[in-house]
Image (cartoon, rainbow, N blue to C red):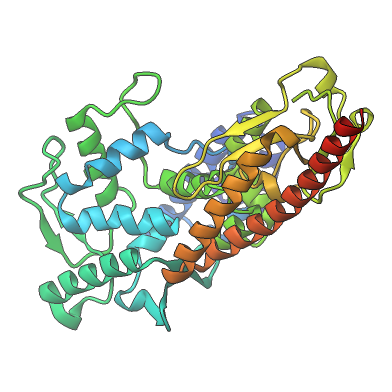
Length: 400
């Protein structure tokens, strides 16, 4: 039998090597041992070196695929934000637009808002990556931040440096939160103000997911939902990655756009005709993916748009077994193929993009300006190629 005086670093390493408990079991036992050693040293029962159990000994937590909020849940929450107290509603608006982590929102300073000419941005410190990050915002979001600054100033003037605070008296059944009291305290992780308020709203309004179950909410889902939404709206993966402040594109692709990549596989097709890719180059049927010959409609694209999205008409030349990283940015992808029959729709879409481009420039939305400009340029090339092909067909038909 081993006495406690004989326990050393090698004993811990032997335990980790033996590890038949699984990662969760090892993690639990290591934490219990660390707490026991700490308490024993504190009480003078025994003495154990403080680094006998180290942070790197704990099994690494495996991150699963993102599980963003569905459009149904997001829309219901946003349509009822007016029910919540204004400061809490602002938490959702700012964190959702910027895709902040909950901790970043909690430590967001009052001076985070920066104006550069006609443009606005939010600048904040990130504890996780130990750096500063900035996100461009609209005038509307800038106004929301200004309103929150004014609210905090009225409460505590310069005695509180942060944009948000914690609240006591949060109700679990009344989303209007009539009894809340603001306190000068950083929003805690365990009893997160935004989580309690949104969960109360979901329960009170009986907000359900697409499967009919009561919706679940965690502030951690906001970041996943927003970045996935940006990708689905047609923003290039590099733009979404920069928005998130990721060091590597792979981080964005793996953890924030997986759902969209699955959707592209459902929007794919078989085309028994001459096609042109986004560069206006002819793509023969023989060079198309074999999956085109297996399912006549597997690669067909007919995706509608909204105020940000661009409608997509044509086909995807990417084999179904390959992963797509440009969903909703099809016109700028070399795998996109266009058909003459869709020429009027391409012209209409190009004209709509020009109008959106003009509006985005007038509103100082630099990210959208860049996106619309790239899509316009690609559509101009596609239209020019198809018009040339159309005229050649007309000439051949007249000769026959």
